Length: 122
Image (cartoon, rainbow, N blue to C red; front, side, top):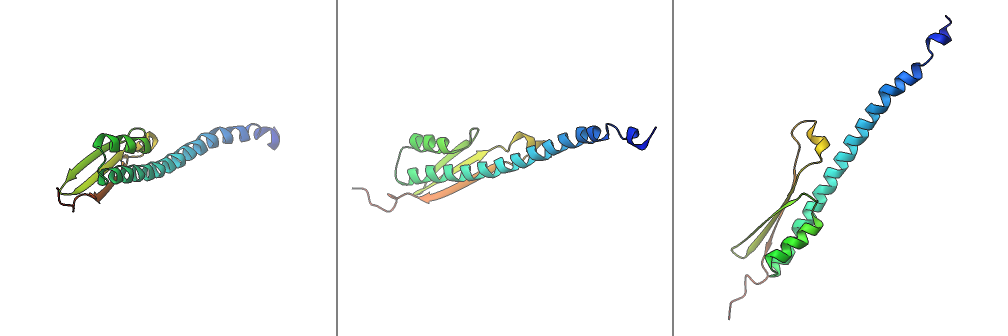
């Protein structure tokens, strides 16, 4: 056999190995980008909820507004005490990142002072 015939199909075999590896790297990169986007959405949702509660809006309204901004599976916690409001938004990491080890979760907490906290009641 000549040298050319021995190498026949080598490119196909190399592509068969390289393409799945490239797809895996692409999927991991997209999951990392999704984690960053979810972090921003959690921070935005916590800010929206805290702002509404600080203005004196109803807790259900603030939760609903925060849920619209938050990632799909986010859990929203609200605490109101001593003239302050605290809104925590937590979301799980994209599932693919969990295959690499403990999946990081994304959390944002915003604390605000109630606008009516310093006013005396009539």
